[in-house]
Image (cartoon, rainbow, N blue to C red; front, side, top):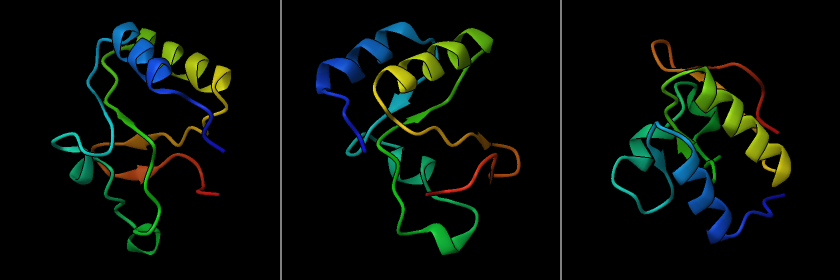
Length: 85
């Protein structure tokens, strides 16, 4: 269950170096399109393209604080690192 407010998302955007896309942002739809088409009905609350390990750490910390599930995606293969709920 997503509990993050607009202010929470803005805080994450200020904290990380990589681009953070939300619904309605240019590139969100293509950035959130799963490789495995059986997951096409699932849309994430946001898509973060991390730049380095600091971005990963901050994103995971933020997700835990805001009860947001994290599903890593390997961009080169577009394969999830975990299952969808």
